[in-house]
Image 1: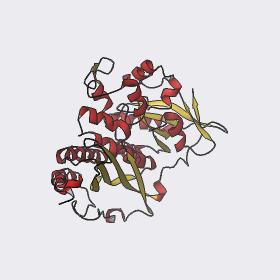
Image 2 (image 1 turned 90 degrees about the vertical axis):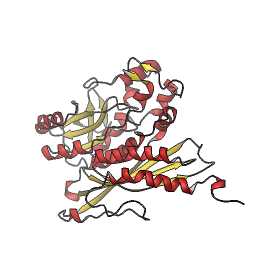
Image 3 (image 1 turned 135 degrees about the horizontal axis):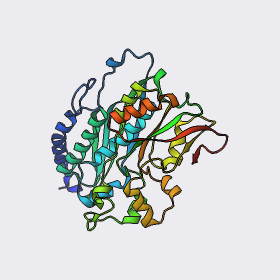
Image 4 (image 1 turned 120 degrees about the vertical axis):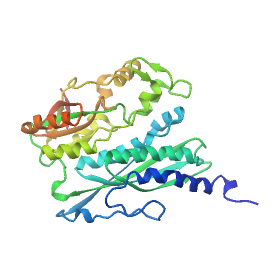
Length: 342
């Protein structure tokens, strides 16, 4: 006699996963959350934001990518959720919007409740770092589509901002200063090249690499830094004219996204501390410096544009917040390239 479990889907394991993750979800609750998980939709009240003249919702969605392969090799799943949250909320904060809530999607070949619990533990921690609530999600068991011991992970964040306060680069002028805020490492970009160069596997992720000061796996699984609270605090002390999240495409693709037409970013190479992992990858792969900067964040995870008059104030605020920050360039007028290495 056939049943769903014999086809590869264990409904009971799914129920058990929900029981395990409830405490992690509850740890992210903030004003506006209606109820816990279990309903058909996550509900969030906007009553707190009635003071806004024209409230605008901002949304971002992303996945973790092939960094998941490192989690599989290490059989460590309690931090990869931070990466999942980071990319959506770091995109949202580039508009100045405050992230409100997050929803996750886990697709796997087989539901292992404890593993799902570890993944959601990381997602919840990422939400706490961003100040947003985890109000829902989906765990899809897809036997025959994914191997039993693998999964994919993605999520969506929604934030809010008053229309008059949106940061879109429109106020940018020639001479504005570009400030780079340090990254925590690779974040979640360039892992296809990383895996080609280092060939991480269950057998070697535990190898200690002197240049990293830690094992290969520890370096490659270092969570993506979440900049939300830093940017929100910075907005209180200085006028931020543009923000760029340094994701896939490195500097060349991402920095120009925060500039209006007719302007370019002039970035000075060597104006910040390049992290050891990037030096190591560039060396063993014989990847030239410009190519490295066009793939990886190279130690800068977020770039903000401020006026020259606000630069010292912004740098002091970032220092007070415990951030490593560097003046890495300036905004120039341009009729051609939108990005220039100096």
